[in-house]
Length: 255
Image 1 (cartoon, helix red, strand yellow):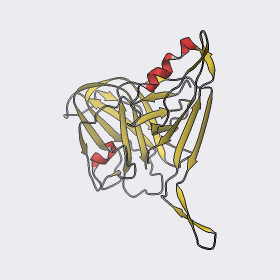
Image 2 (cartoon, helix red, strand yellow):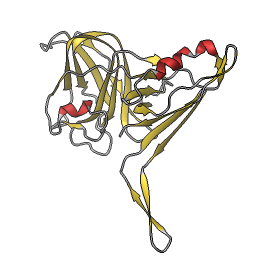
Image 3 (cartoon, helix red, strand yellow):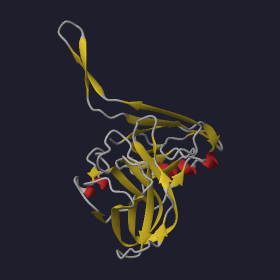
Image 4 (cartoon, one colour):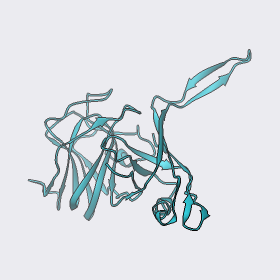
């Protein structure tokens, strides 16, 4: 466990290939529309599901799999598309259900990955999970070139379902659901601290506020990772020499 991990340093997935396809494999890089997902034509295990040609050897520090319907996975790497035994054969990683949203997702740190090709491999021990279990599905794949950590002292999180209240002539109202998915929303609050500790927040503030980012709680539960947007700029109030008070920074999940 450690400080939260944040990153907007996404690796372009390059040429995406799937072993079989009902819904387009390119959908795993459509980070704005989670449910515009990839779906295979089967639920085959002990085989690869997706592979990515980065165009050249790429150093990767982590992979995030988002909204999947299987509970175990391996990340593999190789220097070419002539696989045989992969040069990088990651451990079997468990994928758990996020208790706020009900979706299955995982943050997978990698060590020593520097290959042109990456595969998502479904081990034989994997089981089907989630509401749809007929064919393998992946909502999004995020590959990280780097990440940073930020300290926080208070972290508030919730899951919300969007709705609209429609007023009626007699003074009452009807509530209309605007979607089936729960969306995580998180807030970090930065209290009084030494000005010398402020650099991490200015680094976080350099992330383009108009593009997706990853926020990973990093508290031991790998499913508590979110593909999201940051809503607020960092603001540090210099109270007196060497002491600052930060602000509240809100984030919301992309679904």
